[in-house]
Amino acid sequence: MRFGVAVLGTGRIGGNYINVVKNTPGADIKVVAEPREEAAAQSQDSHPDVDFVADYRDALARDDVDVIIGTLPHWLHYQAALDAATAGKHIYMEKPTAVWASQAEEMLAAAKENGVKLMTAHTQRYYPAVRAMKGVVDSGDLGSVIMAYDVWHKPYGPYNRPEWMLDRDRGGGMGQMDGTHQIDRLLWIIGYDVATVSAQQGQFTYPKSEHPAINCDDTGMYFIRWKSGIVACVSRIAWERGATEYGGDYFFTEGMARFRLPYGGGDPPALFIADTGDGSWRKEEVPQRDSLLDEFTEFIESLERGDEDTPIPQVHGLNVLKVLEATEESARTGREVVLDME
Image (tube, rainbow, N blue to C red; front, side):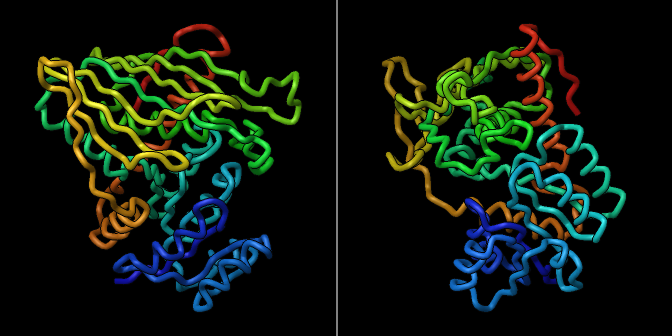
């Protein structure tokens, strides 16, 4: 069976998915939904063989569409997923699943009720350097994980972003933009058995008093404790002045490992291992791959096989949002938040 695909939205990475679908065995791009005429025209020029519509509901009404890829602004994920599920379409939704965990729960329930799958595309776990770190942890070559540190420090440029990205209630802010990536990596590599979360976060680098149009966080630090005893610190800041750091450090009973990712240029992704007594790091090259293509191909293959769950478990996106909301609650109350993860 071949799966007909509709791409909803072309903003940011959305347009890239047209080529991803074209290069995915078992998938055929049928239609792209993009209400912005200028954005649609740019993609139409590059893909004259693809149909374009302004309203995503017109794409959902097509009988030749089996799967939708949602690359919409975060605040539109919820209704688009409910509409797609009702239309009987499998849903491949760019992260985060939704603005709020309660919405994600409704989306998952709608997918189940209508017999379709809903997978949140947390693409960074398909980055080769991140997968290499997961391999180090799973291999046990460095012993057991004791603690981890996930970092993303980057330039902000808020006024170069769409307006909705500066409004937490519409899914804006660096917690939704970056924190969800960092939480995803930690849950995938360490596990879901999170016990407690403590956090401090807020609007610091572009304070509200000086930037009244911004209504979301730019900075956060989380402390996550697993029931197994493993702990992790998440550090993220979107700066006006600063330096970029992007990756993760893992500390084991018999060594250390870290991965680094480029942001806006810089050195290629790499994995570093420290497993000797001389205090040095050994760099291991990481092969480059198309992570978007790898992830979507695995999704289509899982549908072809009729798997009970998706490659990224359907509940995963909900769990990420639960942790994110726990960080916000902790920052608001000044207290540690206890979690009960699925």
